[in-house]
Each structure stands twice: as structure tokens, then as C-alpha cells.
Figure 1 (tube, helix red, strand yellow):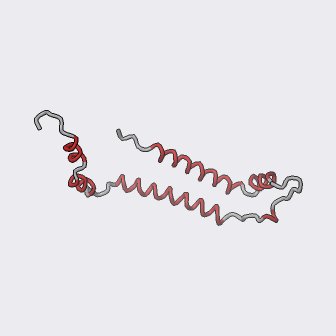
Figure 2 (cartoon, rainbow, N blue to C red):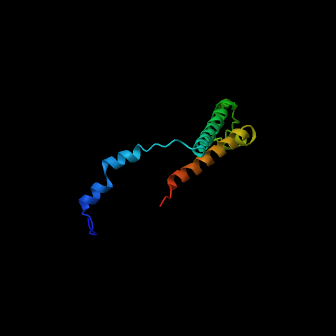
Figure 3 (cartoon, rainbow, N blue to C red):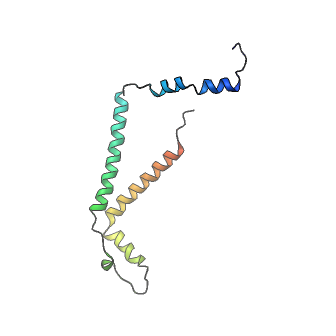
Length: 117
């Protein structure tokens, strides 16, 4: 082509060239030390949050309905649940708040996407 614009068909074939796509997918390079350290850090963070969730689930003595403070006038028992959360279950409540906050930040990060352009 000598300076003229390619047709739509030629541009499509050039853009979605199967050989070039396969070669791009098979372009495997050995990982660098930086990539390995980043991967290990990410795995460590995931393991830490998994450990926090498991400790929160299995390390907490869950109250049954009979152990909740009963108030005949208020059947919703919101006050009793609030008292339990802020007295007996402070540590699991704080751990859960950190996990939920980090998941919210992760969701925002994933929704934002990457700005490579």
C-alpha cells in the first residue's frame, strides 16, 4: 500500500491476525524477582484475610437465642444485640469491619480498572 488507507476488510484482517494473536498469547517470559515478590505478597494478604475470617468464625462463641437479653416490650431486641456487639463481641465486630472495608476497597479498585492508555 502506497500511502492510501486500507479497506475495512484489510484493517480487520490485520487487526485480528490469528498468527499474531497466537504468538502474543504464547509469549511467555520467565518471571522476574519483582513479579515473584508481588505474587507472594498478594498471596500473603489473601491468606491473612482468610485467617482473619476463619478465626472470626470459629474463635467466636456464638450466642444462641436463649442467651440474648430479652425485652418483652421490644420484640426486635435491637438493644440486646447492640449491647452484645459492643461488650462481648467487640473483637469479632472490629475484625469483620476491617474485612468488609478491605473488600469494599478491593471492589472499588476492581471496578475502576487499569488506565494503561
